[in-house]
Length: 113
Image 1 (tube, rainbow, N blue to C red):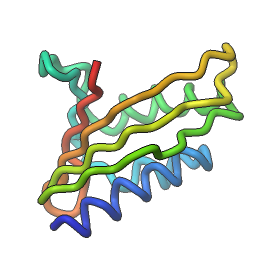
Image 2 (image 1 turned 120 degrees about the horizontal axis):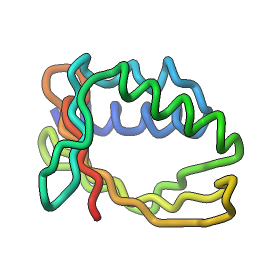
Image 3 (image 1 turned 180 degrees about the vertical axis):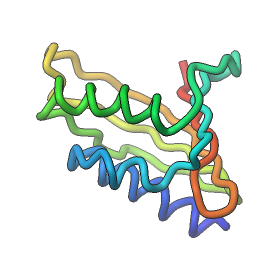
């Protein structure tokens, strides 16, 4: 399971950097849940909502890039630490995302605040 989780996390990161919305969404389950960590508050659910948000993000930030600084994988969980550059507003930031793979898709994503 660990290898599959790493593969999916990398595929979504590569598609994110390529601004390829279809390839990006391909690795997520239909009912993917996006949550805040540690509160576990549900931000949104589902591929269509994810498509709306990320298509707009890609359009508004055509030069945005996420560089992987570190990755931890254990079982079905992958935690990525990324450095985001190229945003339209000029702000660079660090992000930490935790992905849970169920079956052959990413089913949950927590963004660590």
